[in-house]
Length: 90
Image (cartoon, rainbow, N blue to C red; front, side, top):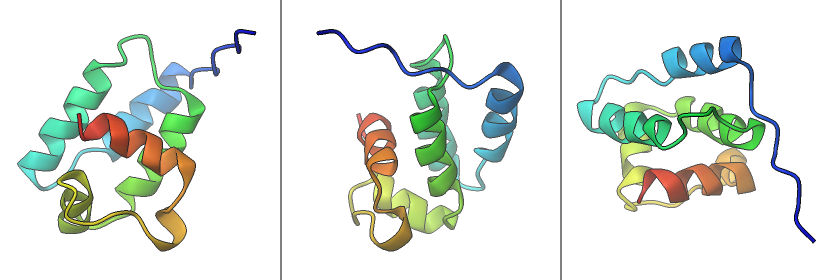
């Protein structure tokens, strides 16, 4: 049985998310921009949720997660965050 694709967030929400994802560290910006480029048709609600949670982190903490120096813990240890990190790390 094929599951239905998850609904994409609307253009306004996507625009706000892209703006929210602007970071102070160039390394973070490059990886996040690559993530958005892999989703030219939009971002699912799950990916948006995970990305939003990651954007609450300080730049250096985010970079540690992206470079696999650390793994998510506490409030950000969710399936959505793990899904986004898996894509950001490739």
